[in-house]
Amino acid sequence: LPLGADLVITEFKPPALFIGRSLEQLALPKKELNVIAVRPARMRANTAIMPDVTRPIDGDDILVVVSRPNVVRRYLERL
Image 1 (cartoon, rainbow, N blue to C red):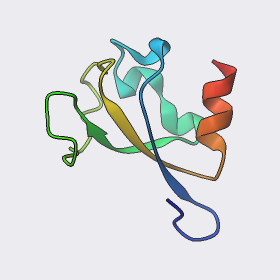
Image 2 (cartoon, helix red, strand yellow):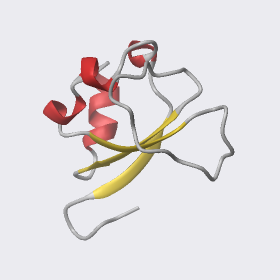
Image 3 (spheres, rainbow, N blue to C red):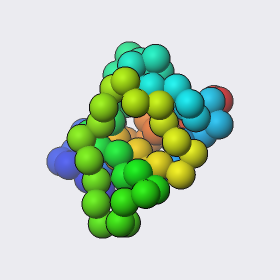
Image 4 (tube, helix red, strand yellow):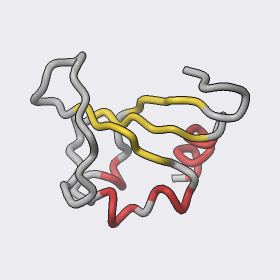
């Protein structure tokens, strides 16, 4: 979802590297990935919560990220 010319919102399932690690440990803002919400598997699909940077990421979570276009795709391709 575009947010003007230079930002997009992207949702994605966390890769294996993220599972069991917290957002704090992953330090995603240093990689130009800003998690603005998490959709935990235990909640309804249309529900998102503010991210708790200390909570371990679950494999069934969906991360909602703001970044420049293509940053998420390029980051995930390098993993």
